Length: 165
Image (tube, rainbow, N blue to C red):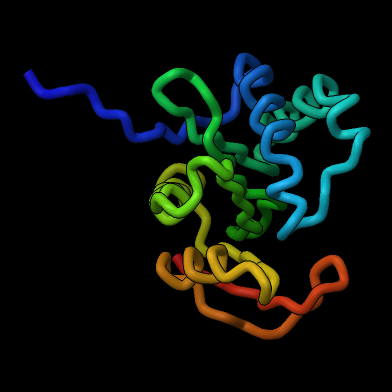
């Protein structure tokens, strides 16, 4: 009998993900803040209300929020499609510090690309990252995104990307 897979599973965000998602954000807060804007204290203080609001947006079909769930039920990453409209959406993702560098982001973005086309009927994804985040730039190029121009993100130079599905 083969051993069970230990690869994290990409799951659509649900109400019961809340405790593990909050733990993921708290544990990785400083790590994420090194490359993306910090969520701020209000995010953590009002987490339950924010989680409910995300689920409501998802139910309306304007966003699709996903989590990478490890074998023990822990959240190892987030992969989101936001501002879904007219066949396109913005992609955002973050991977836990302890899981970084293992190919999880690349695998998850490939999965979300397939879901965007097949399950969500999208034809284009947009993404952006700062120049000082080479890991994210690598994930985007490995998964077929092409640069479309220079931008500024939270006061830092970056690049916009697009993927036609």
